[in-house]
Image (cartoon, rainbow, N blue to C red; front, side, top):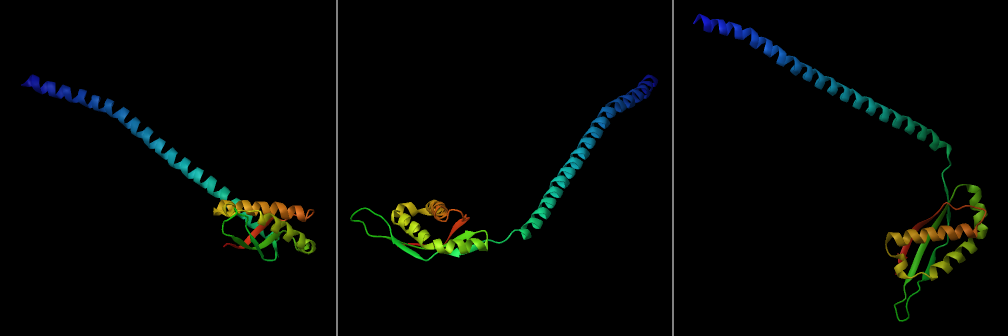
Length: 172
């Protein structure tokens, strides 16, 4: 029995050394995992701060820039009603439009008003050639808006019209 007691006593120190040897890599692994976690959290926080602070600075610059620009000015075009082109024998369809032109300055409004009969004539000539299928959906209206903008800019050549805006579009 004495031999067994000695073996147990001898085993205990070897077991403790083995546990210490096994716990050192386990402690190092745990330390590495904690260090990586801390770096990821700090890096994420730094990235969030960087992007949010840049965005906030950009908003400040945008807020400063807005008041200096003048609001656009709008020019009313007389209401128009035209019949749409169709196949012979088809029912006649009509297009009714209320249009507003957007320009950048008040001075341009006074320059456009004398040319308004020309603008109306160009619009009506173009609109009478449209078919009901040309106005189908939002894509058709977008194409119409782009085409009218191009034509009004040609009619009032030195002046630049920013956009043609629809107040009302009715196809009957």
